[in-house]
Image 1 (tube, one colour):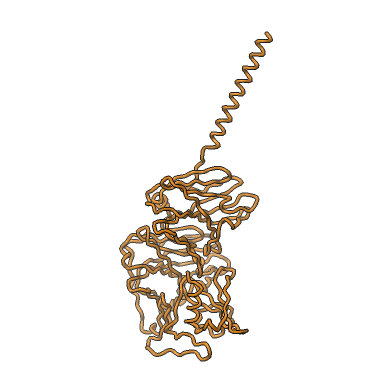
Image 2: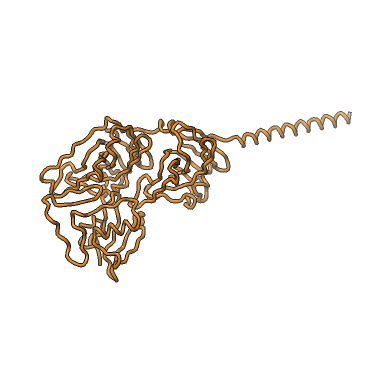
Length: 458
């Protein structure tokens, strides 16, 4: 009987051991099985991260969605390559600071080849991109992160696999750009986007035009014309209502770009229509008062030959993306120039301002001889140091062989150029989003177009 009992106990222990081993193997198998990485719905992984994919694109260059006056633009090294860019809203649910790759680390697979993504965090209202590997996200804080990899050119219907490492676990998903584009939110003329206690944004109109001008031109009115005769303007007419309790910087509300034939990409700049409709004002030096409405024209210069092509306007607003179809049904607007508005005209690309009567402009007296009004030029948002100094030299008559200068970034990441002559401060300059050279008006403490400033130095 004792022998039987011992045998029964041994058998029971053996069965228990086998059962435990089988359970452990099943659990191990489950742990190794990749989890699903959500493309279309926000997800929360307790104690680690919340994430929401807001955009996926493939293009030859990367720039922030709401570019500052001086912006770093990344371009592919190989003409046969594209940047695959997945834009993700993330929230750090850890109790300590984390970088973007510590929250989510992404690898793309296309055609069986893996491509490890690097990260760029949006900063200062999406006007700048910072290296995500060295930018911390505080506990319970949000960030918008671009997971970018340079990959060979691929078709929109080609499958892309995403592997995301989150909290020590692998998450997988597969998608095509064609499928993702089908989930994008489209709006039409007349639609309004509403964000409580921030702003309402309404698409009032969209049209092509050879010239952009205010609706009721005054004696001095800005008029924009394309840089090349082969180009035209695509204009978004947007109405913005400020729902904040304080003023809202006009150029911070939204930004736009247009892509034709899923390849040709063009961005632009905003101009605000003055309250009386007589002029166009630079959006980056204009604030919309609380609970006030203003109309902003977003101006994109595009080749005329693309007017009959299929395209999509992408609008960035409050860290989300909205889209508008562009096709041969988009209307064209014939600009009118009343006689009383012909005192001055301004070209959008060169910023030329000239008297309509053809008379020679008067030069300023003194050591600095600024450019005549008919020869005022504009820059652009990706200017080199040499180009920036050349623009100031041309418009302001400053000789940098005798003048000193210092460059720095202000708290809003605008490039500031301080120009001096010996101990004397000559002027402080910056370049706005549409390329206009601005100078600090010392008396009023605001930046104005440099040619309008009479008290800019010590």
